[in-house]
Figure 1 (cartoon, helix red, strand yellow):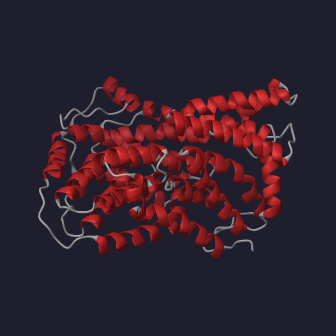
Figure 2 (figure 1 turned 60 degrees about the vertical axis):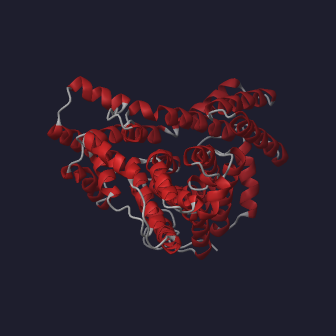
Length: 468
C-alpha cells in the first residue's frame, strides 16, 4: 500500500466521515444483518467508487487503486494455497490425528482447567483453527467439565484461551499467515517474534488455570473415549506420522523460507501416507484440492478431520483480495494518507505508535466484529508510520495478532464470539473474565511497546531499541 500514490487530498473531517461511513456499512452488515464480510466490503467498494467519481477522480485511477491493493496480497495468497495443501497432507499422513490421540491421554480430573487449556493449545497449533478446535475438542471438554460439576464459564475460558493460543502460533493458521503477509514479514520470523509476548502470556494463563483447577474428582470420560476410539478407526495413528512435525520444527530453527518449509513438509507427508494405504494419484489430487473426508461414523471425529485442501482456503483468499482492494482504494483516494498525516503529527514515538496500533485493532474488532478486517485495515493503515519511525515490520505483525486475533472472541457480537457461544453453550460475557490468554496478550504487547523490550529497528536484529 505504501507505493500507492494518492490522486485526491481530502480534508481530515472529510476523510474521517468517509472512513466512518465505510466502517458503518461493514459493521451494520456483519453485526446487524449477519452477513459474511465479503458483501459489505463490496458495498463499501461501490460507495468509494461513487465518492471518487463525485470528486472528479477518473474511473481508471479508481480501478488501478483496487488492483494495486489486491496485488499486495499475492504473497499471502500463495501461502494460503500451501497451507490448504499442508492440512490435507498432514491428515492423510496421520500427523494431525496422531497428535490429537496422544494429547487426549493427558486429560485427568486433576488440574482439569489447566489440562483443558494445554490440550486445546496443542489442538489449535496442529489444526490451525481456533473455531474448529472449540467446536470439536472444546465441546468434549465442556461435557467432561459439566459431568464433574465444574464451572462452565472457567472451562469455556480455558478452551477459548487454548484455542486462540494455538491459532495464533500455528503456521497453519490463516490469521497468522495474514498478519505476516500484510506487512511482508516471513511467516516463521513472525511466529518467532510473537513468542516474546505469547510465551509469557501462555505461562501466566497456565498458572492461573492450575490455581483455579479442582484437586481431584470422579467423572465419566465417555465423550473423550469416543473421540479416541473414532481416531483409531481412521487407521491413521502411527508414531512415524509425527515426522512432519519434527521436520517442521527443524526447518523453522534453520530459518528456511516459509514456502519452501511448507513444500518440503507437504512432500514428506504425502510420502508417509503411502506407508498405511497408498491413494491412487487421482484420489490424492482430489484430497489435496478438496480436502480430506473422514468417514468413521463418529460425528465429532469426522467434523474434526474433514478439512484441508486448496478449496478450503478460497473463502479467506477471496476475503483478502477484497479487503486489500478496499485498502488500496482508501489509499488511492487519499482517505488513509490524510488521516495518517494527522496521526503522525501527534504520534511521534514508537511507544505511542504501538499503543495506537493495538487500540485500532481492538477498536475495529469492537466496531466491525471481524478479526480479518482488524488485521488487514490496521496493518495497511500503520505500515507507513512504522517505516517512518524505522521500526521493524515484524513488530507491527506481532501487535496485529496480540491485539487483533485474540480480542475477537471477547466481543459478544463478533464472528468468533457468536460462534463460540453457540457451540460451547456459554455466553461470551460469562467466559470473558476467564479467557485469560486473550485478555493479557494485548496488555503484554502494549507493555513491551512502552518498555522498548524486543522492539527492533528495521534491518537491525541485534539491538532492540525503540524511539522515545
